[in-house]
Image (cartoon, rainbow over all chains, first blue to last red; front, side):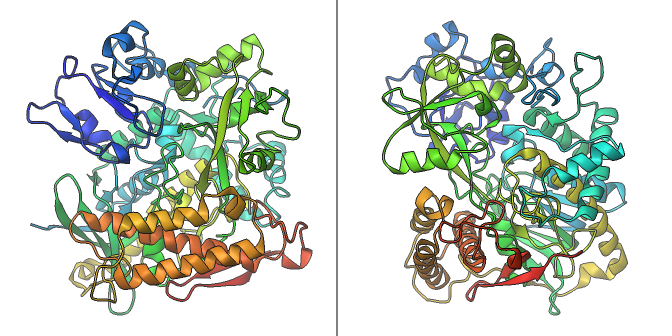
Amino acid sequence: MIELVSAAQCVTCDKCIAVCPTNVFDRGADGVPVISRQQDCQTCFQCEANCPTDALFVAPHTHPLPAESFAHDEEHLRRTGLLGSYRRDIGWGHGRTPGAARAVGPALSPSGPPLIS
Amino acid sequence: MTLELDADVLVVGGGPAATWAALKAAEDGAAVVLADKGYCGTSGATASGGTGVWYVPPEPEAREKAMASREALGGYLADRRWMARVLDETYDRINELADVARYPFPVGPDGKPLRTGLQGPEYMRRQRVRVRRAGVRVLDHSPVTELLTTDDGVVAGAAGYQRQADRAFTVRAGAVVLATGGCAFLSKALGCNVNTGDGALFAAEVGAELSGMEFSNAYGIAPEHTSVTKTAFYNYATFYRADGSVLDGAGSQRGRSVIARTLLASEKVFCKLDRADEAARKAMRLAQPNFFLTFDRLGIDPFTQPFAVTLLAEGTVRGTGGIRIVDDGCATTVPGLYAAGDAATRELICGGFTGGGSHNAAWAISSGSWSGRAAARFARALGPSAARRQVRAAGGAGLRPTGTTSSVSAAEVVGAVQAEVLPYDKNYLRHGDVLRAALGQLDGTWAAVRSGLRADGPDVVRARQAAAMVAHARWMYTSALARSESRGMAKRLDFPELDPAQHFRITSGGLDEVWARPQEVAA
C-alpha cells in the first residue's frame, strides 16, 4: 500500500491524485497530497511510476504498515535505492530508455519466443 | 450541478478494450465520451500487470497451431471463426501500436521485433494519449452507476458520479460500449480492485444476457500479503512445505490446486524460483520489472530464499465468463449496447479457460475495436433525433431500494460476498453441495441489497459495486451448478469428468430471479 508521501520531494503537481485508479489521495492544504483512503489502495504502484520526483513509496504489503516500518523511513528508502526504483526499472523519466524496449525475458519453453511482458 | 453531455458513443471503462473502442469509434467519425471509474491509463489489470498478446503472424501453419493449442484446455467451447478473426484483428492492431503509436517493442537476438507482449504502464499511457488526440472526451474518476434506456428498451446513455469533482453526470449517447473489465471481488489481485463487475450488472438491468459465468474461478499466485499476481515465472518454481520438504504435485500451470489444498489445511506453502539459471534470472528482471517489486522491497532473493505464497481470486478477470455477444460487432442482446474486453465473454476464442493474459489481451484489442466501430454505426443510423429521445434510468439494486429503511451497508455486503467467493473450498475446489449452500447465502444477500442498500452522492459508487459483486457471484454459482461435469476451468469435485453430452455454453442472467440455461455452440 501507499505508505509515504515525501513533502521534501513533492512538487505539488497533483499527478498522483489524478492517476490513482482507486482515488486514494486528496490535495492537502499545503498542496502536498494526503493519503486519505489508504484502505482503498490496491498496491498497483501506478502513483510511484507516475511521480516525476520519486516522492512516493508503495510498500508491497496489501495491509497498512506500522509507523516504525521501513516504508516510512525516507532516508533508508533513498539510501537503499528503493525510492523511485519502479520508475527507474520501467525506464520512465528524462534521459532513460523505456523498459519496454529492453524487455527481452527468458523463453518459457524451449521452442517459444522470449517473454516480453 | 450535474454535468450533462451528449455523444454518439459512450465508452464505459478505461482499460485496453475501452481505449480501442473509443479510438475506433472516433476514427469512424463519432463523437465519443469515455468514462472511467479510475484514470484511463492506469486503471485495470493490464495497466498495472502488463500482458502477453496472442500475436501470431498470418502464416497458415502458425495460425493453425495457435488455434489448436487451446481447444482441449478450453473444453472445446471456442469458435474457430472467432479465433481467426481475433488473430487477424490483433495482428493489425498490434502493428498499428508499433507503427502509429510508436510503442517501443523490443528486438530479439535475431534482430527482429518482438510483439507478443506489452508492458502495462507503457501500453496504457500511450493508449490514453491516442484516445485524447483522437478527440475523445475522457472523464476520469467518473464511475458510471447505471444505464439510461428509451421506453422501448434501447440503451441511450448512462449516468454516474464524478468522485473528484463531487458531482453527478449523465451522458446521452446513441450507443454504449461496456468495457468495465471482469470481477475479482476486491481481492487485491494486481490492478483488479476497479474490476467489480459493474458492467455486467448494468447490462443485466436492461435485460442483457451473460455467458460462461461458470468459468470464473481463476486464482493467481502471489507472495503472501502482497498484490503481484503475475504467474509466468512460477514456471521456474519449486514449492515447499514449512519443514523444507518439496510439496509434491504443486505447480503453477498444473498443480495450483495442490497449493490451494495445502493452504486450506492451514499449512503455509513456500516457493523458490530455483529452477531459473543465471541468464534467465537476469532476463526475467527485464521482462517483468513489476514482478520483482515485491521481492526487492521485502528484501527477499526469490531465486535462493523461500517465500510464502498465497492465491488471490481473479474471478472473471482471468476467467472467461461475461456479457453475451451476439454478432460480429460485439452487440449484446439489447439494442444500443455493446460489450468488449473482460466485461464480455471470452469463450468465443478460448472456451472455458484462459489462465493467461495473452488471449484476454487479444480479445480486448479485437472486441474493443469492433464494438467501437459497430457502436459508431449504430449511433449514426439513429440520426440526430437520438439526442431528443426520452430516457429513463435503469439502475435498481443499491440505487433505488424497494424498502424504506437503510438496513445494510455496502461494506457489509462486500464482506458477505467475499465470504462466499474468495475461499478456495467454495469457489476454486467446487462441489455442488457447497455451491448450493453458498448460492443460498448469496440469494439472501441479494434480497437484503435489493430492499435495504441505500446510498447517495459519491457513496452510490460503493453501493453499486457491492450490488454488482453479489449479482456476479450468483450468476457464477448458478451457472456452475448448471454444468454437472468438469470442463475448462469449471471443475467440479462431484463431477470430475468431462461429459460429452454437455458440450454447450451456459447462458445466464436475471437479478431478482437468476437463471441459467444451455446454449448450443455454433458450428
